[in-house]
Image (cartoon, rainbow, N blue to C red; front, side, top):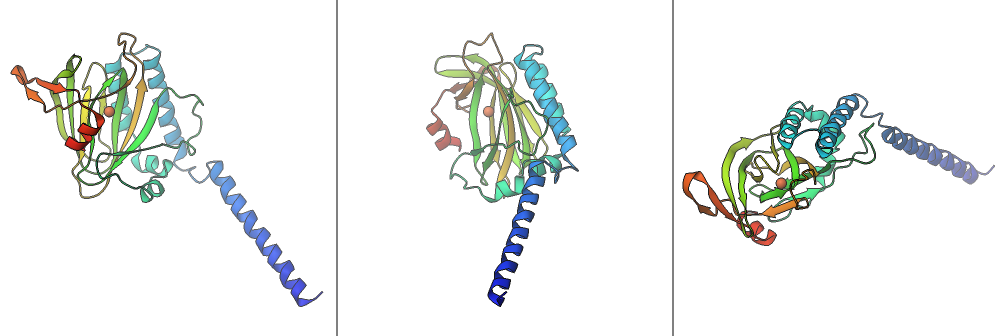
Length: 254
Ligand SMILES: [Fe+2]
């Protein structure tokens, strides 16, 4: 055997070993073994999230009860484990932040085991730069909740007291600081309008779950309604909040 053949054979052997190592690592990740120390906790947490969302969608619980359950579940989360499961550091490293408003990022459940393939809740992560906002909006036929993953927010909510063609009548309900691990929720019946501003010095991140089309008494299909909740003060602490476009809401409050 020539020395060139020896070198080539050695090279091939090493290359195959490297490929095997890569395949092994990818296989381990695919089978969720890296996250074995945290996965059972988070798998159970997501399982519970699915159960309470399905109970709402199946009309077994009222939306205000769902709000309590979701807030309770959010408050019990093992945040470091959730961030690890969501691959948060990798996700946050690659974001191109919009100049105004928030970016909606998909949530990948590749590291979560045991969830049904068809989920009744939607989910996303909002990411925004310092000073930017999840712009003010109300919700039709949607029960939803925020869990701050990272950052320092000012979060405000209003009850939707009346819904007119071109405006809401709203009543302020919550105006508070929200840090990592803190939560708030929304439904047709409670705290329907919200606005979250990132008041910290770093980018901020909010985890969001939503159940759409849960309320048979609301003829409108689920979705956001952009409003100006600082619109026009009325008697008794109420506010006339004009319905505005996404563009205008972003321009005013993004
Ligand atoms: Fe919302």
